[in-house]
Image (cartoon, rainbow, N blue to C red):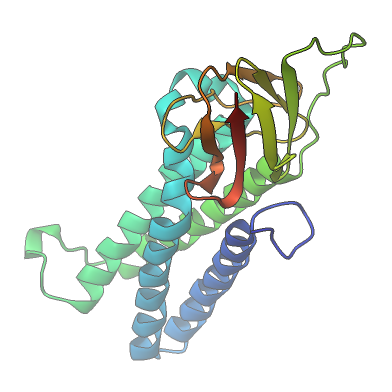
Length: 248
């Protein structure tokens, strides 16, 4: 599903970006509550943010990271993967630190030797780390959805017989449905963004494609082959997905 900020990002990416800003502002509000000595309200505010962020991690950020995690660490030379990995690493650290502070401040679960006594340094460190993660998250959003890609020079030669091209762009396969004869090679050519081509039945799978790169697969058996982008879609025709129908 396309987003609502007009950047070409997915709906979940746009929603998560705004949610992270809202949570960052909520943490600043919690800090002001503490300064006014409204400690109960402060604790509720900060704990709620930690819990909401866990939901965002589970539903949005972790699935996005898992989509390209198998390509690490080699892919870290690409800023697309590097900035997301730094964001994920620091984000986990910020969430764990926040949960630790909540446990110390609001419960008696941890033993005395694991509890801190000076509140301000810990909370200030958490707030600073959170906003650092938020800014890197904005950088990740920019690199993934807004940064221009280097365009490859298009080939002037015509495609040979028995070959079909599917354009891969943000965030669709064009055409979404293609009908071909047995023995045809389908070439998915990335026109914009970073995407992958993965069969729902795992019969073929590309690496992550960048603008100008392509993936090819020759269909030797009749059938209906559903596929999707591993970064922006899912099996079953969800979001960025397509179908190749092969006939004799």
